[in-house]
Image 1: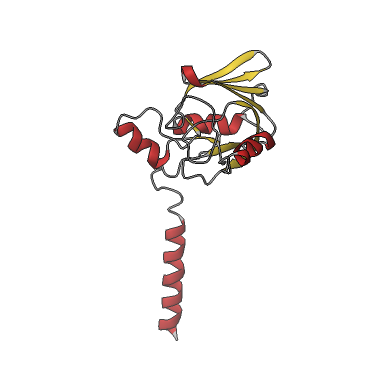
Image 2: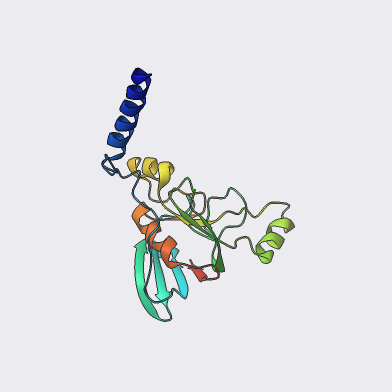
Length: 180
């Protein structure tokens, strides 16, 4: 009986010692938070200038941030059909956030709009969809290594650290203007 009590006490003592270790593991980049807090003025509009490969986040007429961007693998012209590699042009709105994106984080826009669907239907095609602002992810890292500047299927890509800022700054309903 005394042997059993000693065994239980020894196990309890080991458990207490283990708990004292606390959170001492080194922090790796895989465990650092991706979700930043933004306390600045509201972003009222996103303006993308495809030909300059630049994106601006504005609060009214004040530029809050500017980013170099990467586009679809066929960047000239507006998206017409699924699989054409083009980034759409026009006025859109942020409509979703994906914290589990394969491209680090992503923010979606409301493409296709009814007029995009109608145009594609006239040709018996699908307009495509799932247009996002997103980070590099594995495809972007490979494209960078291969020397490709425009590598998405039609999305707008930025660096992973930048999509963390953008994800924190945008809200559902923010207007997005994508210019040629």
